[in-house]
Image (tube, rainbow, N blue to C red):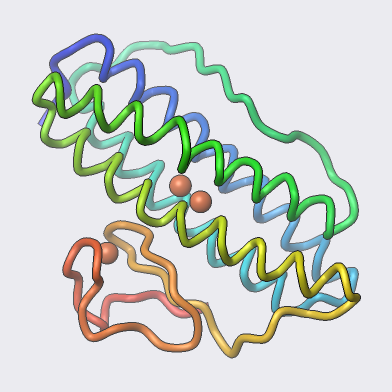
Length: 184
Ligand code: FE2
Ligand code: FE2
Ligand code: FE2
């Protein structure tokens, strides 16, 4: 289903750009975290990078037939630093999405009765809340020179829902089954 209204279409393009860059940035920061000896923080970055890929793909599909070149502006952290600082960049990015970007995009999609975009923005918003929290936990540990405690990270491949250590029987956001979750 293709998006109909120009404003929601713009927001889908913008969100696609932001998620794509977040995906790549987290992979880079994950590799850096591993080199610093933070194995689990590295795993967390890698898993959440996948969740952002899920969001990017969802937005991309909702653009549907409305394809054309689009310039995308992304207000986000660029470049490498120490893991503690990279995590701050991640926290800031996630909080921006939670507090401003996705609530505004979601409201616009609802107002314009764009059901597909509404679902895609809702899925992302719910996951970013969790990401902000997990990156904060990781940073608290890293500030003390410790790694975050976790065995594995599970990501829902439909909506990007993110949870540590064990997948739920059903995704609380989209209803996907436990077996579908991807383990990192
Ligand atoms: Fe995302
Ligand atoms: Fe996120
Ligand atoms: Fe889900």
